[in-house]
Length: 237
Image (cartoon, rainbow, N blue to C red; front, side):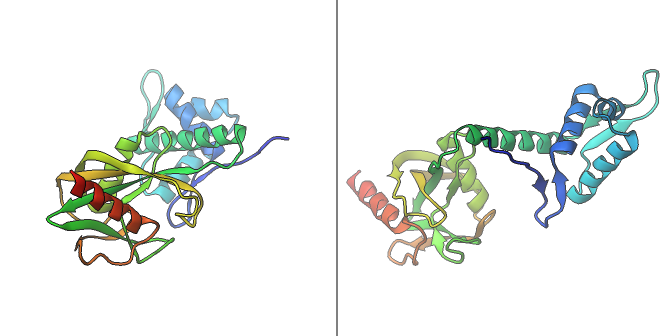
């Protein structure tokens, strides 16, 4: 038996952006520099190919292809930066699915969390999505495929709090299978210091705010345990 699947990208409001057919079309436009050649290689009419491109751009709200008509050798078509971006995102997702289709067993998900303490206050974010929507938590998130955990925490912290940070140390690895109701996650937790940026909630965070260590609100996941461990480690230094 084989695992079969079909992947497509949608906008946040559910509009179709890119699927197998339109992916092949954009890929061939990138390779040949011509929408005419790309549509011919796929055995589709130029009109249909142009309609696919227009549909992507209408639903995305941005141009994915630029064309120059005429000239000695005919028209030239190239992908825009946005076109390259969605093509690369589709290819990244395909690599992940191909990897797991060959190894279809359940694996833990890898996450990162960050502890930033300044002036006896700790930075927390208010979760904007389930699970634990409306509760406070340490900034963090899932590690992307092909990404180092050190890069992931810097990226997640910037996206959720607006702050640029440096890593001081690794606090520990937290792997309780029941720590996240979505499934088994393993989190690498870092101690951090601020180096720049402006504090503001973003991405999945409805709010980013410093709380006195003596007045920490109820927390999501196992973050109360993590903070206690962080305070013990900082006191021992």
